[in-house]
Length: 250
Image (cartoon, rainbow, N blue to C red; front, side, top):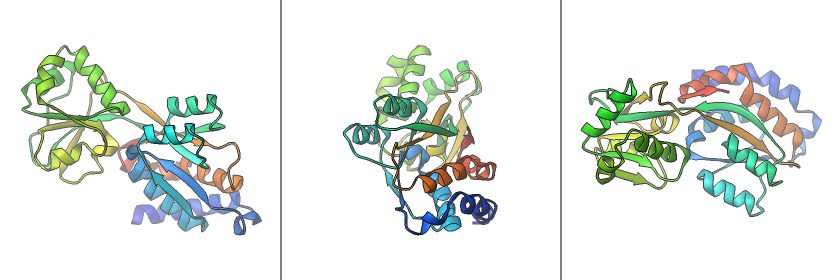
């Protein structure tokens, strides 16, 4: 709470300056957000609402669902997606522009209190995966696709297959916290969203950085309010919240 209050205080002037008199009559903001960005967007949007008085309606959905909905003609003021997904929607004419604001990395979770996994190098990570009794990753999302390819590059796909649980949606770390699997890999921001786990990022030589962007509609209901929110997300004062959620400012 103190961190959020500090952000509200430091950004209130920025928001007020970006919202002219039309703020009293303009429509509110609609925003779509995928699970990796849920925690940080919840806090940042809450701070923005407190500072501006502007209501932001957030629709949480998997990235694939957001892309499908926008591709099918649904409209939204802002869509939070990876930079490549945003660019594809811009190319298709579904969004007009993008603003990068956060970088996400991948990590490994163990149940709280369990020994930290030795994943400081590619060889160590390979040995740790082979020694684990069970492992989970998400299926279909960016981090899951990357982990699948990484395991193949490490040459242990056959050994990992029978002890791997694929999670179609939601937080992999929930399985780890319940003791259903020994290790779980997903974006650090998602792993940190679950209580009862300890998280270690992949080493630099294996790391995969995912840039998240705010994709903006060509004709938002309230352009001034949308611009104010974008400035809010990219402002230096928002960086502490972004980092606290396991992300880095873009």
